[in-house]
Image (cartoon, rainbow, N blue to C red; front, top):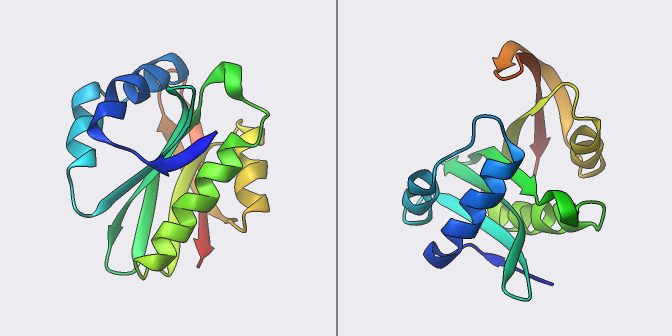
Length: 144
């Protein structure tokens, strides 16, 4: 498995993984535009030409917001989420980011456990943040 920066050519597969995983997915256009922006970084895990997972951040000065973390459903429980997040956090540090933020569905215990094991801590709740179904988001952050 190769963990690397996302390219424009990856966006079709990334958008398909996103659409299969989320009730309100980002569009192909959103991912394509994101790859071209200077203050965004996205990482993919690829195996045999197939995208298994991706994550990314938007950064301004020394802060990063992580809006997307996803592993294809048939590739979960293989440590892919950890590998892509570790690479993402390494790149954030190299860019001078000192703190990273994310939101996660309150019911997503697997993701919350991963983020906690990577050093993220819970900072609060955003009521009814998610739709389809409506659910609170747990706010998390990590000092780099």
